[in-house]
Image (tube, rainbow, N blue to C red; front, side, top):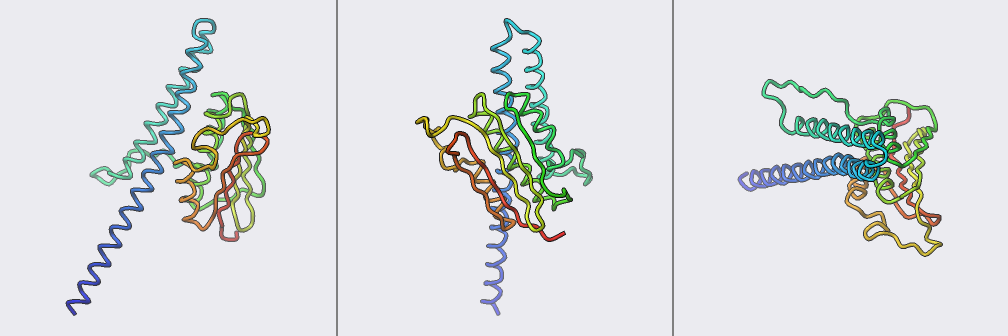
Length: 233
């Protein structure tokens, strides 16, 4: 009985340790998604404002306003995340900001387009409510791919396709850029789609039994494609 009790306690401790590690990984992914996206936008917009400030003050003002907006968005999302980690003493959540989801893609697309990367969006199939975890994951896939495209596809464009199939959700983001046929080299750490953000997305998708592929396109730019299984409607 003593040995059995010891084994049960050991199993409980291992399970608790695993749960803590998984939660740490989830928090790290959320922080990366929030900070990387919004700070990238702020850098791009601040650089644009600096370039046009002497000659086009109105455009510079618009860019700086976008920087302010991205900063406020970052603070709101961080407050939401910290609220989940340390809820209020009275048990009430003061931050009622909705979680990111595919239904809220429009503001993201507008921010990316305003920062200089035109985006075309296609929705295939009949949109339907998704489990919250899958919905957030799909949004983050689009966010990460467009943020990378904004940073690395100067003068390019992007295409986002979301397909609601019967048993799976498919998300694809294509960005344009220098073609490998011209001898252009991918930036360090970008050629195999193994960046920290994409690695975190692969882990998110794998939780739901799906898969994510990110690679450089022969004609230039990158392709991020994900499939997440769904229960039949």
